[in-house]
Length: 309
Ligand code: RIB
Ligand code: CA
Image (tube, rainbow, N blue to C red; front, side, top):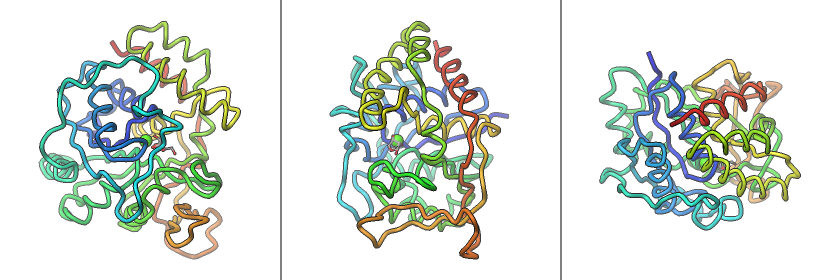
């Protein structure tokens, strides 16, 4: 029985590849996609989600647009990483379909309440939609199997030295998700920065077909930022690691720990304060990714996305 999943995202290069990996993974049944402002405006992230699904031949999947700004903070973008379109690089056709009428949180609630079995939520952007879902539809929250999110870090930062972008963009939303009591898995930079897709794999994808070429062209653009800023020889496909965590659980090692979100400090805004050595005595509220079989993840990603028709 495939695992039913709902993906909330802000495409974004790695979100796009994560969507393709979800479609290419027989262990998963992607029930729908919701979008949030983050890497780019809501309008662009929504159009990008539709563009990617259509390019993969899955334009029939429902896409629902959600929050166009964080709960409290001013909206931010990551155009330096993903470009003005949010998916700079490939010449992806414009979206043909439109998002459904329903707001993302109402779509998520409907999908959760109508599902015969609990559904896994996979948030890949700022957690605004998930926080709003929990507040607006508490009954639907009971139909959530688990939340496997890309965000945070034990000992790293990317948007600031202290914080990872998804949590930094909406720390108040992240705090609500981590304090929700749901079964949360945090896939942070500690593992995503260790699983890079390099030039050889990009060429393998480029040669695999039209979709593989699109992914390679995404990596051409996205890799340039990571080469320049981090000196990486490859690209961290952050969001795809969260999808892989659901599809192939053995890829990641996790530790059950308490995670607090810093919302007061400007210097450390959005820090995920992971009690790795259990010094606070606070009850664990998340399964924090502490290890990854990087080679197996990259091979899985290239093989599955490269194999998409
Ligand atoms: O920090 C990486 C995360 O922020 C990824 O989800 C990326 O797509 C951006 O949203
Ligand atoms: Ca993302």
